Length: 327
Image (cartoon, rainbow, N blue to C red; front, side, top):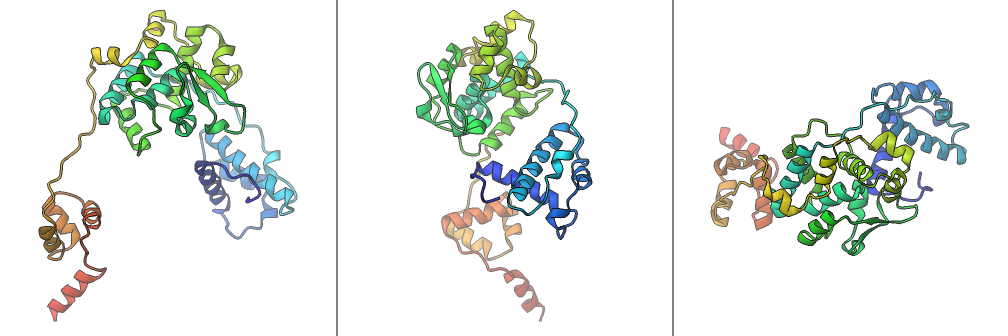
């Protein structure tokens, strides 16, 4: 599909994995022989409607390309039955979970992810939009959104509420921190959320924006979606006016004033031997045994040796040593 405009790395990986799924049952199957039954058999392995819908879109895009280039006579996906509507319950974070998430973001690695979490919660940006966000895109009153999932559509300017302005003043956004996926997993664990679904921060933000503004069209416009999509996928009902007011008053100072109990990973300090002692150790015994003496994994030991410039025994060294000693 080289004729398609290149997408993000994540999109390319998705198409590649989808095509591997398509050819897995029979790698030698000619493209023009794929039938509706073949596609149904592949999609039928997935119980989740959204998973089936996602792979179906990828298959359809591929077969449309194949038809245009005369590799196939038709797109079999066009004759598939309609998928049922997704009726899964929309999940948002509770006030307690929101507070724990924000407090964890403040505490974890000196607030490295605080700005990103605050933008997701209080501005409702998609994860892909935050990933493409630059420091220059954040003004005093609005955030310019031009990337992410909808990078080929009209740009939009998202208003910055007062509490988000306080977060960005204390923790200026300079881009997603390194290892963001790992950091977000740690924050998720600290939240102890009952239901953590994909885009739960966007669900939460859109829900509270709708309750605050009492204007679905305005919320949909600011969040780059439609009222129909918002009601179907994102918006939950919050009947407690006090909870809505509390949400939009959450500043760093207010979050720190009430410190919830959270669990965050601690950094274990490793006391490495001197370079000379370490070189002697890794040539005395295999890495896996040398690593146990230091209290680290063999992978961590190997990385450290490479970092400080210590040559390691070549592959097969210890087998040869054992064989020579047995003679």
